[in-house]
Amino acid sequence: MLYSRKSYFYTLLVVIISAFKLHAQEPNFSMYRYTPFFTNPGSLGVEQDPGIMLNYRNQSLALGQRFQTSAVSGYYPFYIGNHHLVVSANVLNEQLASFIKMNGGMLGLAYSVAVTSNSELSFGFQGGYFQKRIGSDFSTDDQYVNGGYDPNAVSGDEVMYQAMGYATMSTGFYYLIKDVDGSDKAFIGGSLFNLNSPNVSFFETGEDKMPLSLKATIGYKVFQSNKIAVTPTMRWINWQGNNMMNIGSQFGYDLSNKRESSKRIELGLWYNTNNLGVFSLAYEQENLTVALSYDLALSSTLSSTQNGIFELAIGMNIERSSANNSGRNNYARKNKRRQKSYKKLNLFQKNSKKKTHKQDDNTIAQEEIDQPAVPGKKIVSEIVYFAKDSIGLSVEARNILDGVVATMKADKSLRIKLVGYADNGALATLDTSLPVLRAEQVRAYLVSRGVEAKSVRVERVVQNQLLDDSETAQDSEGNSRVEIKTVEK
Image 1 (cartoon, rainbow, N blue to C red):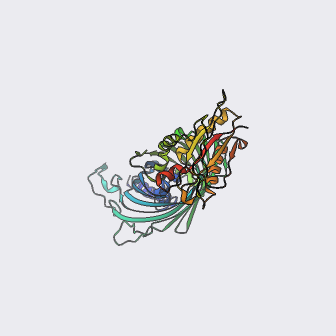
Image 2: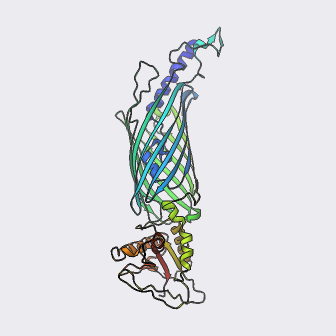
């Protein structure tokens, strides 16, 4: 009996050591996209809305034991012009068989700045404190007295009941490029974990420093149609001279690409260089993500010590109230209010007489557009607004354009023209390219959604066209737009 329990104890230690060799020193998740705290602190900087993420990982080991990791993360962005800060927090619980337990938490801060109209660069830093403890729910030979188990008997094993705590710090950068439809086009990031190399030894006189860990991620969308997108990705981890890579691809399918009710399924297939095949399936909609993954051992040696790894991720975005919203998101949500006020100016009244405004050095004649009242003929007349000095499409702008797409698909004979406008009068003669760039961005989005390219014409302008030549923020918002108008063939 005693020999059997001793044998079990040491066999379990071997299993635990084998499990540790398959992971970096900090928690590791196969669905790293949903675990920025353990992948790249900088990637939190591109989050647009407050959110909560729940992660769970269960690795089956030999002898009926499990390696379980649970984490809860939250983040909240604060916008400052075209920059924003993201404050984040994480709580972690990890249990390695019935032997080692770990609890702790982290706080993080990420800063992001727009590099171009469709890309941003972010930097992040996080710090935390963790405590590891050798579990007291494991029985040893010393607790068996006269053939019976006495839970009150103290184990004589030196290793039992040991506990230690340590602090850790990590940092990273992340660069993200958006596509014309607002989806991720490409990304690259790098991070350093355990910058302070904490001592994680259970013994006061011992030294077991956690090694510096380097991580890198990269991805690029190589194909996108109306419904399908293919994005190859790679993750690389290096620690103590060991290297591990996840190489594969994400395959997305849009169930509904309407921005107000987008629904998407994403399949992931990767090869882990630790001889694991990783399969994931995710369902994503505007404010909810549910993802599952399974790691399958591809070698007989590996499968003898672990019987597969299961992961679950649930993410929820929290729509902030307009009173608390600012920056880019606030600008997008103001779109409806601006559109209402703009219509009051009667620039797009049908069958109205043409009017002109006074011309000066910085403005040109502004005319109302007569829309012919053709019986049974659909008329497209929309306005898409932009942030100042930007050609990026907001969520609200894409909602409007999706409506134009639906109208154009319903009537293949429709032809439209796009007229771009600048921001304010002071820049009217300096930046004549901005109106055209904005119109081209709208055209690219419409074509990417299935509208025939020949049906959309960008109107070339000699000067910036302005609604108002003043430099106030309110007039700048009104000027920063693209008009979409029906034209006769």
